[in-house]
Image (cartoon, rainbow, N blue to C red; front, side, top):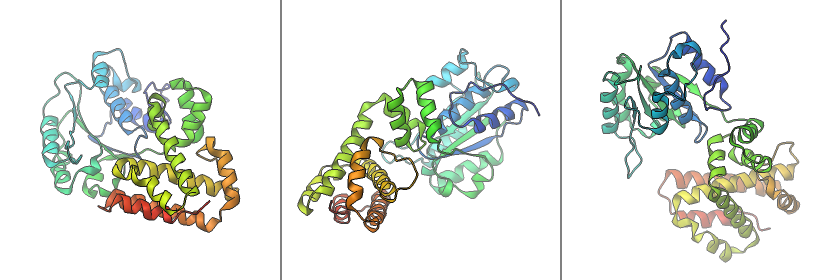
Length: 335
């Protein structure tokens, strides 16, 4: 078995996936279609663009590494390469419509303009309806020469089985706490204390952690969400209803807030039950320890389930967000 030298892809924590693709390059066994799956901000897009750069690097088959100084790599990284085709989502609904899929397949059928391969990348492909997905099948069944399709999905449950069967599947897993922390410190120069907090909060989504380091408003949003939850737990009904009035006006903000609340309830369960697991909100450890003295496990379980169900209802239905949040606060314990 041939051992390849260490890779230079800008992909961290997914070495197994990188090396699998590099071996395909080394043996000249590239597939015509790849489906990269994994939760949001886990590194799917970075892996896809790194693969595109490696494929179009000079002598790519030798080690499967990237030459970042070459014109092709610079154009791909800037989003301006003529042979990299990216599917455009609808500006109003964010759906991937059949017209956009047909535009990609038509361009993919053309010969490469200057690269070795013409590569199409479709992000959030689960947002394509059945008709839009059907429009892709002919390209998958009769793949154009020198063309590669890369589909990115958070979850493959909504993807047609006929598409999945024609792709090489790469399922990216969340990074471990230590891998996340190491990546932030050694590759992004994040101070150790901040890296520790971000590694815990991100849940293995290294892309989210990097973005949060670069944009302080993301951590400020988390702080505001947790402060709001602690305020709700100390308040009576009227105060609870007033607390959620403002965030209920923004559905996306509400979902972000509920995500942070869920992490808080999980931490409180860990502290209350003295489970030997790392808590996420390490900067709230003193408050969590104090709250753990005044809450029973049954109420914690009810709060976790209620938060999860409310988030799912807001995300997937047309429920009245304000009423859903008000009802949720009534199911939280009074501390």
